[in-house]
Every structure is written in structure tokens, then in C-alpha cells.
Length: 379
Ligand SMILES: *Cc1c(COP(=O)(O)O)cnc(C)c1O
Image (cartoon, rainbow, N blue to C red; front, side, top):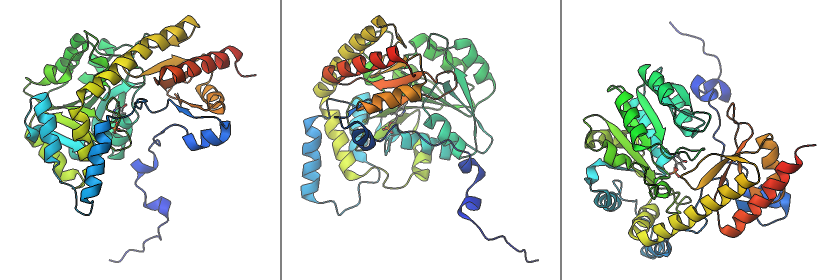
């Protein structure tokens, strides 16, 4: 029997889940902020490294450009995967590379989730921990943090009892910067049903590592007889955000093989692979970034608190700040002076901004402008 089909419109072709997806908010466009303010832009909206990548990165990329870029990249990224494996004492077969670690978040959802499956994550949180599951039709339950921005063990326990297929947990968390202790992480691991995949997103681990209570996720998960994956990235502490390369270390090679089936075969370009190998090889540069960021973290948080602002305790390279006014208004006012921050909009946090730590000079400008704006308030 023939059926008369309605002509499509672009909108009618789009899957329901996609039409309903919240858009990812990358923060204001620095070019627009430059045009608006007429000032030098201070970009504090994406938790980037203000000190830049290791000089070895540019050298490695230059060499590759000289060699030529007409060949496809190594589809398995074996040199990089081996370097990562060696640095973490795991076999390269348990390492997956991504076009940023967000690419791996997406691959995990594609490989693991069926429509209707439940995903558990935290709120306030990293929006892609919600967007990618919803893209494949999964449901997302977000566990709120405590009033002090901490991990709510009881709420997590209840949420995990609902039987998620996948758990996205960031440590340190984004946007709060809060850190789970070893005990808290072990508690989550114990409460996560064995039927679930545990994903520990450690995008900011390098900054938290100097904190004695910060647990090495790999060390905690390593011996477990269940599926898990730890995600890390070259975008933040290593300063390669523009290059797009992240990686995951999984409980076993079978999970990596599943991700290999769903990923686009050349997901990490050759310049990115070369850059990451060079960055990994310069641990002195990383240590210097972490040291300088740590100094600024303590200094800027203290100054803001001295001025009466509430700031979440952070172990990362950014601060989550209660401005006492609409975050959109505060961000707009800051944009007018050339400072780009991320206005938070999740329910209960509409007065918060997230601001990355930058150089001492830029941080001083930020503290001064923010405190002036907050003292003034909207008229
Ligand atoms: C920045 C960030 C990432 C991803 O960064 P990539 O640039 O894609 O590697 C992942 N998770 C969290 C929590 C982040 O803040």
C-alpha cells in the first residue's frame, strides 16, 4: 500500500531529542566583546591556560608542517596513546583519544546508551554531561550539591539507587571547582550499581593534585572488577584548548574497542597528536602552570571574599562566584569593560558567574571591575 508522505521542512526532519536539546553555551564571543568595549579583552570564560602551552608544542607542530600534512593522521594515535599509557602505567590498549575529551563524552553516550536509559550527574554541572546523553534519547538526573557547594553523599546514594546506566562525575567539579575527597569518591564507587558505567571526568586534575586530599581517580578505580573510564584533557592545564585533544583510560580494552567503532576514524588530527606528545613531554612547564595558578587561586579568592563576595572553595583554575545580582547583568557589565566571564543560568545559580584564573595583572583588573560592578548594582 502506498502512503502519501508530507513534504519535509528542515524542522520536521529533526529528531525530537535534538529539537529539545539545550544549546551549549561557549560564553560571549571575544571579538564582540572587543568591539563593544573598545578595550583589550581579558578572556576568563573557558578555563584556558593564560600562560600558554609548552614551547615544545609549537616546535613539534612546525616539524609536522615541514614534513607535510597531506597524509591522514594515524587513526589509532599509537605514539600518543603509548606515551600516555607509559606516563600512567597502563597499556596503550586501554587508552582512547578524542578531539577534546568532550568528544569521548559523546562517544560514550553513542556506544552505551539506549533511548530511555538513565544518566546520573551533578548540578550545577558541565552542560555536555547532560546534552550528549539527551542527544541519544537518554534521561538525565542531576544531583544537587550541598549549600556549601560540596558533594551530597545522601542525595547521590538515592540517585544511584535509581539504576543509571551511566554516571558522569567530574572531579574537580565544573563550575564549582569543588573537589571530592578519596572517601567521597570511594563512596560513589560503592553506591554505583554494577550495571552502570562510571565515568570520572578529571579535566582539571592537574590543578587539584597538589591538594593532599585529592584522590588520583586512576588509583582508586584501577583495581576494580567493573567497567569505568577516567577522562583527562590537554585543553586546560597543558594549554592546548585550541588544538582539541583529550584522552580516556578505561578499565579494559573492550570498552576502548566499542568507542573505536563509534568514533570517526581520524578523530584526532596529526598536528594535535604531535602537539600532545610534546606537551606531555614537558612536565616542567605543566608544573609551572599549576604552581602559578595555585598562587592566583588563593590570592584572588581571598580578595573577593574580603570584598564580601561568596566564592565556592575551588581546587581548579576557576572560581564560582555569587555576585548577588543577575549573572547576565554582571556579565554584560564586565563585557563592557573587556572582561569575558561565563554567566551561570542553572536554577538556583542565576546570580553566579564562573571566572577562570589568569595572570596576576589580569586577575587584579577582574577583581577591581567585578567588585565595582557588584557594589553598584543594576539601576
Ligand atoms: C573543559 C572540560 C572538558 C572538555 O574539554 P576538552 O577541551 O573537550 O578536552 C570536559 N569536562 C569538563 C568538566 C570540562 O570542564
